[in-house]
View 1 (cartoon, helix red, strand yellow):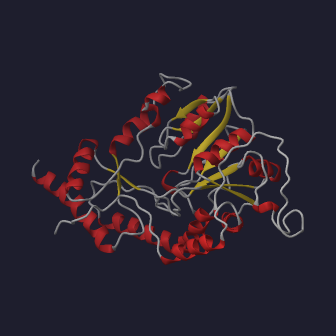
View 2 (cartoon, one colour):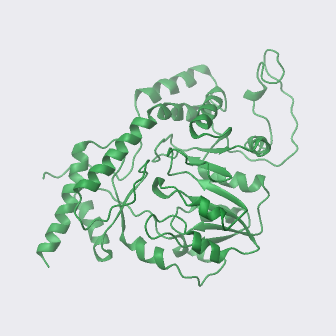
Length: 377
């Protein structure tokens, strides 16, 4: 097969005229900050995922941090899975909590309820459960072992039907390579009205938004009400209309985009050689994380790079990072599953810019690698 001239990325955003039209509308409106597009996006997203309330923020990370701060969760420990991005381990440290990292399930790499049960202590204040690669975390099982706050991290599961509805609060991501990318951004969804109101004000230093004080919002008069009071500490992490415009365009395409991701998943599953262990089925296919023999993984990554195919590893276990090691509740804890399985992981390209030719290109060179290896042994 002829080699590509350009890199085939493992992940990338994909947009077009729809995003440009909505951005143009926002730019011409003169309202670039938090305004009508954010309000529209919050309402439509809450309806899609089945929650009463939604708060659009600058990132999933800021969303998780706001939830902990709103509930005054600090000076304890927070349980999260070691197979995850740095967010879930770093956010507890922002709130003076130890990061109580636990092992994962050997099949889907989600947080392991039995390991969680072993490491719950009187100081445990919350669990962050990540839907790894879009596969739902076992939140019902976690509830049988822990009656405190469970944050459902839905960064990879936008949108798997039912995602976000098992935890006490759900936090979503629209970062540049997610299934609904907008460059960056996040959403908190929930059913608790009191927590919703508190979180909403915390997104801008405790100030009600300018848009919420415009005509007919509070005063019922033309213009806007300039006066306001602040009675709590807040932050600056609200989404703006420029970001919300891209999100709204992406949201309209979400169903067809996810269908294409599942098509990639299906073709990979059908045509990749047997040396590639198929990942569990995902409705969003945020990552296609295959597993190959440990002794072949890094050689395969280098081989595919020579063919202009970019791959990655999702994820290096959190307990292997120095900053996390310094903050673990039990530094000498063993992680047998993640220590074994992560060395096999390889994420193959999966995104909406991929053509059928791109999919076949990846399959050809992965299979070629193992075919040549078999001949040489």
